[in-house]
Length: 512
Ligand SMILES: Cc1cc2nc3c(=O)[nH]c(=O)nc-3n(C[C@H](O)[C@H](O)[C@H](O)COP(=O)(O)OP(=O)(O)OC[C@H]3O[C@@H](n4cnc5c(N)ncnc54)[C@H](O)[C@@H]3O)c2cc1C
Image (cartoon, rainbow, N blue to C red; front, side, top):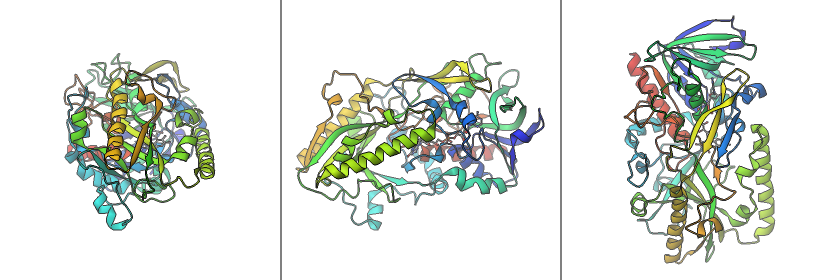
């Protein structure tokens, strides 16, 4: 069922068993999981079915610290969420991503990869991916030309990726609108969360529109699925009862904001042309591809973060302008258009320049987790949005472990190419001086917002527990990458959908 919340009588009361706030990858995956059940599910979405400038502006916020994309254009605020224009690259987290590593401060999740595996299978379906198979050996059956570089397997392995074309807005609109027990409200911007007097449970949330009309929504369980930054903002801004914001007794909400660093880091020169079909991603088709990765043992030995390295033809890499430069418009559609058109220019120029070097020279691009850092954080700014809610302020901050790990990963890859006699690797300028702490202009994030309500069984070190429930509040949960304790090397959406489906399962058990 669907209702445009702008058509409701003022001060309406909406009631249900479970209230999911936000209809993006996390919220929609959860809502789909409840279709046909006995419970009444309320799905509240800030926007409509199409992009709306007035609604998008509610994502506006300030950014300090490491240069970042404008907050307004780094997330989409309408039905389907940011899957409306995501790139769709998916791969699961590795075992080591969940582990406590003594050289990575604040690492370790209270759950492990095996706890997520059953839900990864379901997440693959929601994201319309292939089978939950990420072994090169499996894919080699279908793609016999997939030829890995013959490098030492104790040090380097090939991490496989699949490619999703799922746009949740168009894909799942009809299913949800037709579902009898799921009540989708669009233009339902949640602006406040109200707890019981002792702040031990949530009673209701307030939704508001641009005309000033507001309504209340009550439920047995509430799930925040607004995306990492908006989840955090809502918790902090709901401060009429808990002065520091909900779930924030320990001053942890908003801390440990993490991104994936995607940085052009080195050049690979092969001594002779080689079959690189396994590694070169073709966005026009959905076939899987691989990135070079460092084995878990070697990561521990070198005390480095988890990261992968992708290959693109060098002529293309050299002509590309970093995303952090091209994606600076506050309108996400314009930011994307500028970035795409620059990408098109780079492809054209590189085709002209390349002249036969295509299969010999490559740019190596790192994709790496950043180490959890309490000073990398989201807080509330002083300005308010059109609905009266304080805007978010992001202070993105990196650490020396992040840069040292990028350098080490490329040194290891370079050594392996040298030993095997396949080629040579040349580090980019910013990595050459081990004492240089600076970051290059092309320090891109992947638009992957993670952390800020991190998971830990101990309320002193985390905001949510192993079931994504906010510590100290019996019926408030967070769905999405905000719960990640560490960021892994993998893009977040497959894992955040799996985690949301695990939460869904947990709530079903509680309700029954
Ligand atoms: C250009 C780009 C490329 C990307 N490529 C990849 C990729 O290749 N692989 C990958 O894994 N990830 C990628 N991502 C990240 C991916 O889009 C996110 O991880 C994913 O969409 C997060 O899902 P979510 O449900 O948590 O948040 P979102 O998808 O952002 O959904 C949040 C929803 O909550 C709603 N909402 C927000 N505030 C409120 C409120 N107060 N009240 C009610 N509703 C609210 C929003 O309108 C939105 O619909 C990319 C992102 C961008 C921008």
